[in-house]
Image (tube, rainbow, N blue to C red; front, top):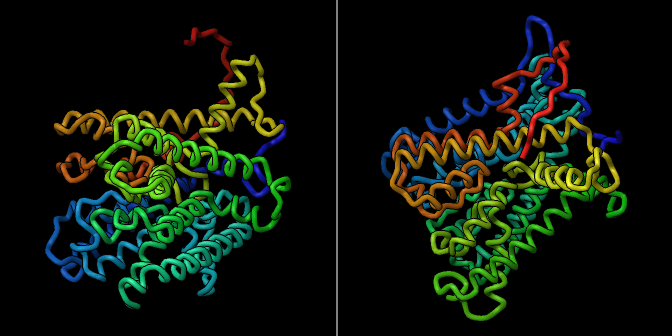
Length: 455
């Protein structure tokens, strides 16, 4: 079958390695995340990082949320952390959003260090590349693209913040919100996120533009810059762009309809233009951005359920977003459509998907749903919070979104540890977790076929 992925994506799983010294890149990547989370927690616990002492658990929760680019907070970022603490959070967001290996590879190249074989394999796994040379080029491309977009974001947001706050404070706000938005982190310097800019098209459109571009991923953006024509794009890039457009427009229209008369949300705004702008912001942010310009706890139940689906889907692979990913969502729909039509092959844009691709999508979704179910069960057993608020919190943590209906502040120690675990799982990826728990081994045994009733 013809592979539908672009030529620079891998054609083989690199985790399947044999020998007495098998290297497990997913496990090493997870260990790297955990190491930086611990380091971040230690820095945030320093007296110079906070206005008043915080607990070790709250420091660890904040570090995990920043490193996984989630944005759920138990300590207000703008008032409780000093400039040093906020900069620590920004560094963790940048590392978690772009990927640890991007910085590791670029640092090694800049300083003239030569990575060992184990670290080269880990880097290749992180970038989904076949050789270390292409990995180094990919790391450079990602860094240049990210820093370029962030530079533009800082300049544009400064034009709005500086006249309001002055050069130093306005410039810092522009930097903070640019990094947080592009990396889909959702951390804000105000307790009500960006609610004060609900009717400001400059800030709202710039922030949404940043997290949408970050959610598309460097693969799609590289194709757009290189090929410049929609017809020349790969099937993968077309699917990501089309799905992003459809989901954003659909979510915006549904939000507008569901919240139009809600006196606590859109109903409180004057003029259709302001309502449309707010609907656009809230319709696009659930796919892992985490900012809000309206009170999330005031949304209707129908709106919250819609947002659950958007948070579960997430953004594109190799992006700053999480969730099960857009490509997984599309593959599931395509596989279902093919089954209902009685087709053996699953196709997208006149390209056939391999059996491994379809099974991988099913595995990712299964692990994701199991993670969410366990999280909802644990929080339901340990808190008295409303079920919808619990489900919203768990799905937001898994999708590393950062939106909350108010349950974050009510979490006890068990709840915080549960959400921290879910944020980490959501960021490192359900499939990566599956590799960690059970490294795939090809069996030479073949068993007789059996029919199992389904449905």
